[in-house]
Length: 201
Image (cartoon, rainbow, N blue to C red; front, side, top):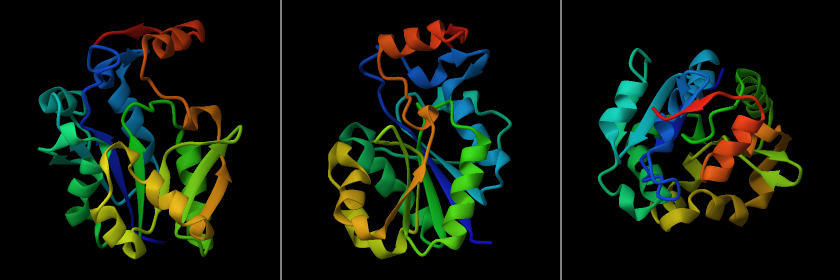
C-alpha cells in the first residue's frame, strides 16, 4: 500500500458569503468537519489542515480529530500559498489528496475508489470528473512536480499543473458531490432545497 497523505485547504476568507463558510453547519456538523471525515475514515496516513483566516474556529470545529495543522501566514495570497505551505510536510508521501474545505459532501467510498485506482495506475495525477466538470479531491504524486508547485501563482492552484500534464492525468468517474462546493448564498439555498438542515456555526 502506498503512503497516502491528505491536505485540506481551509485558510480562505469566504469573502463571497460574508462569514466563514467552513463553520457553517450541515445537519449539525460543520462544513470543515464533514469535509475531513471521509479521509479519516478511509485510513489516509496523515491529514494536514492548512489554516489561516479564523484558525481557532477551524481547530475548534475539528476538536477530537487526529489531524495536523499548518498555519499559512500568507493565506491572503490565494490557494496556491496554502499548497506551498504544505510542501515541507508532504515531500515523503507517495500520493497526496488535495481537497477543499468547502466541499463537505464527499463520501468515503469515493476516496477509497480513488486510492485503489491510484495504487494500480501508472498515472501520477487522478482527477474525478462529473458531467464533464473536473472536481475534488485531486490525488497526485507530487514528486515529479515539486519545482512547478513551488512557483504556482495565486488562485490557479494545482489546475496549472494538471492542465500542463494531460499525459500524466487519469480522469475517474466522480459524482455531483465532487463538484459541489459552498461559495455563495445560492449554494447554501440549494442545499436547503435538497433537504439539508443549514445553520451558521
